[in-house]
Image (cartoon, rainbow, N blue to C red):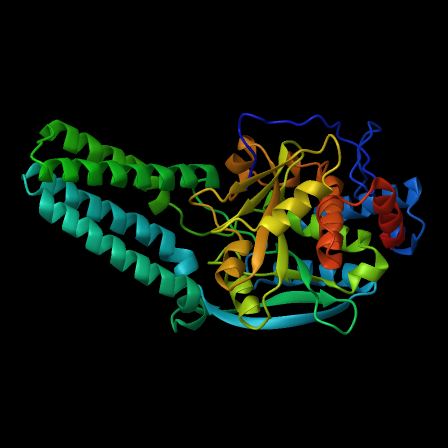
Length: 438
């Protein structure tokens, strides 16, 4: 959910953003105390209209991030009502879609996986020390296959069907027009806290995978007749323990306000909804999911009952950093070309696979046959705040919201109309965006 750590800032000045994503240096993009009717009545796309919309989006961010929003909680329900009112005032038909799910995988799946992986590593290291590398390889192969099959079933079916720790929550779906949208803008509303930030958890996952890989190579070397030193085996196990600890510690709490994750993503998506050209808005739907932090349950439930289409998920919009478009599995070339082509000069957009140890709603959609990506903006410092108590408005101004919102609106418009590359001209962008400010 962040950009390349080596590029922690881009050549933009935080300030007022126009509907094309350009930024000037006039200062803050808005005040939390704005009149909530101002941008709703704007139709001309003038600088004043855009400034009013930017102020409203910032006010929305402050409202959503005012308290923690655990999935299914009263606080999440109030935040969802705020989103529904925003969309209704802009001509969308809004519907609540309740769903039920098992919270067991989302709450305890990661810690249990950390414990199991560490036990298996210990068993494999023991076989290496004892001079039985063939047994160790067989253990890793069987365990890897079993974990893969069980994990696949849990994430694709178990989250919605397991009878344990059943919970209920609601997705918010908004459309304009009678036909099913061909493009969806998505963001999750719920928040969670963990003892370790997501950056540390991701590092633990990557480290664990590396330790398992080295263990497998050493066992292969043992089968070939080489005998690594005993000390090396125990050092490998110690490294495995260090890497597994943040995974085991990734229990779920409800003490983060989730300003960055993901009040910012919701605000960006609703800002994009206000910027969509009126003609194309009928082909673009909005979905605000719940229980993303519990195994992507909301996205899995919603995609199970919705025909596969194109989705732009937004998860995490920080004040600084690159805009990054992340995907899982095969590269969704059409989306990547369209989003990068929709970027304005001075607004670099990078594409990359999703970092191991991080999950976003687009993963659930991709598994269900959708063409989906996640759009984010941030730096390495962004990952250090996510899922912690410090993820509050004290650490976030909202400077990046309108740049991401306008990029989402341009990209969704082009995807809905079949226009990808070459990109629309600046004049076409200006005309469509001015028409879309509602």
